[in-house]
Every structure is written in C-alpha cells, then in structure tokens.
View 1: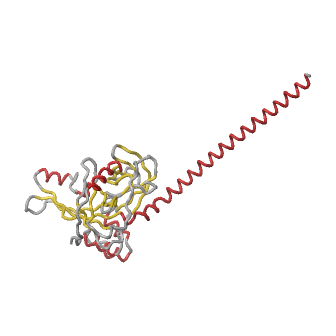
View 2: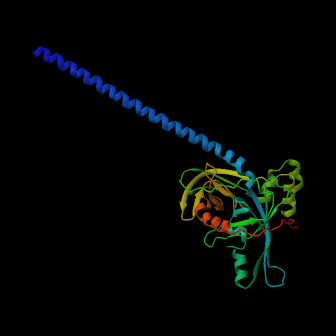
View 3: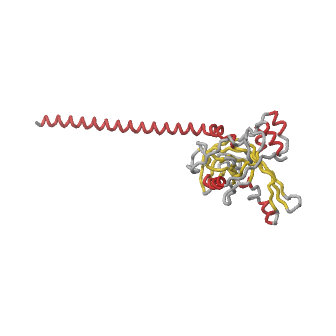
Length: 310
C-alpha cells in the first residue's frame, strides 16, 4: 500500500509539473504575441510619420497661399510716416476663407513703431492685401473677416473666384495634442526671396536682384513658381493657447498651418526664436475654431474679382 501511494504521489507530482510548465509556456507565448503586436504598431506609426510630410504636402500644397500686401501709417493728408510691405502665409479652412495671423491681416498689430504713431493720432491704412495660390497665374484680393481679440489669429475672405472652388479645405484637429507627436509646418519662409532662391537658374538670374515687390511675385506666379516649403519636427509643449515645436520657420512663414501626421491642423504658425530652432510657436487650433464658426455664420454678399494692384 505504501509503495502504491508513493507511485501515485510521483505521478501526481509529474502531472503537476507538466501542467505548470505548459501554463508557463503559454504565458510566454502570449507575452511574445503582445510584444510583436506592439512592435508592429510602432513600425506602422513610424512609417506613417516618415511618409506624412510628402502625403500632407501633396494633398494640401495648392490650398496654402502666399499673402502679400502693403500698408502705411500717417497723419491726415501728409506723406505717410511709415509704409511697409507685408508677406506671410495663409491656408483655406472653408470656401473662400483663409486662416492667417492677426499681424498679417492688421500689420500694425504689435508693431511698436506703428503703435507710437497711432497713439499720437496717426491712422493705419491697409493699401492692399492679396493671396497667391500655387498654380494660379493671378492673386486674389483678400477681404476683412473675423479677427481674434486675444490671439494672433485672423480669418480673411477671398474675392469670388473659380481659383479656390476645387481646392481642398484643410481639416481642423479635435485638439492640438498629444505632446511628442510629429508635426508638419507648411508656408513661405523668407517670402519672395525664398521662392526666387528656389527657382530655376535662368529665372533666378533674372529676378534675384529685382526689388521685392508685387511685380516680382506676379512673375513667379505666372511661371507657376509660387511653391510653399515644408519642415517637420515634433510637438514639444502646449502652454495655454500656444503650441511649441521644433519644426523650423522664418519670416514669411507666419500664418502657415501646423499639421499632425493625419493632415489635420493643430495650430497656426506665428513666431520663432531667432538662433534657437527648438522653439517655434503656433496658436492652438482651439483658438482658431471659434473664429471659423464666426466666419461661417456670416455670409458676405458676392464680391466681383478685381485686378491685382500695381
């Protein structure tokens, strides 16, 4: 009897060990499957991020325009004390609606020289403001629209034209986050100078030493050389209505869209820290959304197209 009990005990112990070993192997297999699934997702995300700049640029390039204009500040009928050209970027967020910065729509905004004159009674006057879209031979006149009182944001309207009818509207993201995601910034850094520098050699030789005026920009448009530039990096921080990222920018890039890897607008580019590429600044999409609602609620009367300024 004792011998039989001993044999049964050994058999039970062996069965228990086999059962435990089988359970352990199954757990390890499940862990490996989960790790493979996680790595596969990470690889797919990396592929999406690497392809995002090209996909986003090809999808929305023609909907991102180069804004050009001029304004002056002066007293009465006297010669203007200040006369300045304006360059920047803007993008379609609705039919005939262009998002940009307030300091593009109202160029005297936060300009200390202009403010000193305005405080003394001078009047700021926007002489003209137009937008050149890629592949369009002529610009469109920009008309007033909602302007933020708290952020450097504005929405302008284009004059009625077939140019924008078939251009895709950039979608807005639900939120600017998460921090760490890849971002794409599209616009016209360095303005006319930047586009001339990128032009074919024979065009560059003709335009490099011309004045940075409306005639030079119009020549670029006639040759289909209005082309935005793209940089990309990662979202570093979200502070109030501002987003911080390391995608580089320069003067002329103000007003361009900041997009996530899905091609959704998470902000509007508006400033950069000179000498430190790690801090380019944008205004969050959360501040842009109320302006779009305001612009969409007000439908202007038909405005006929006009010739661009001389």
